[in-house]
Image (cartoon, rainbow, N blue to C red; front, side):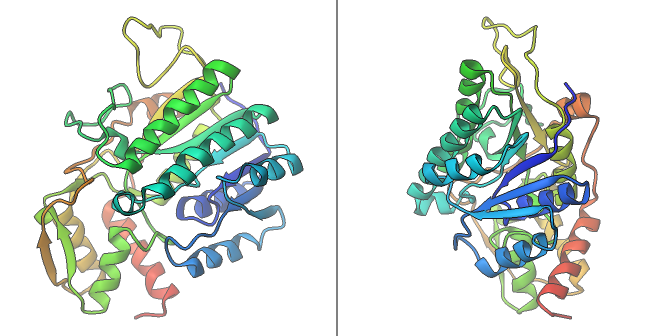
Length: 341
């Protein structure tokens, strides 16, 4: 169902996706309240720089708060009335979840239930939340479909995102809270996260350091450009989920429900081998990489590939930014931001 909205809460607003989404909403005349704990999982100066750009907009307000602190979350909700909440705040990263599982419990589980409670009591019209392609875990049937079962995660990060989907469904069932979960596939682009491959590879190549090439370059990822992610999120925000009248408990569809609840993949629908990804970076930089070939890491999956038919059918959008173009735009930003030629 198409819905109008004016005031939006974006959690993780100083993060990669949160920053880009906030910029887009502000450009469209929406009022945006940003929430972020500004933690040091990666360079806080990059988060501050994103936030500084958002603060140039008069219709942007910011609250520094941690989702795992229920009192802080309640304070933010008591000061504003939100039509839509977009929850992008999370402890990210598959590999870090092997080192610091507690961070994922606090941010992704405790924090998410605090958001659910706040949305429930504030009568929010639509909660849109970030899930992840990592929920597909040990699945090997390609492309990954929202209608497939996803009960075999291979990292705690993935398990926490699957838990978010289940928790949201419960609130949709119990309280009629309209919830939409978005499974993002390997997002990249300007202002990206320093812990992700494109950033790490670009930095290392420019500094004449070797890059770690996992699974000997045979890994495949459905790399999705940030503008496509944001376009998908914005379209979904205005599309309030409705119960699926055909849903049956005899053959339950994981992607829909008898409640106002939906799941969507947002991916480029075009998996690329890691070796090809590196070649595109080398081409854009005009410089060859030194490569250290390594085995697949614990928690990683060998391939991701998004089926986006449901997204296209419901909101009329299919991501399509070519990898070469997206990488070029990232490297232009990187050279400008870090003053490198």
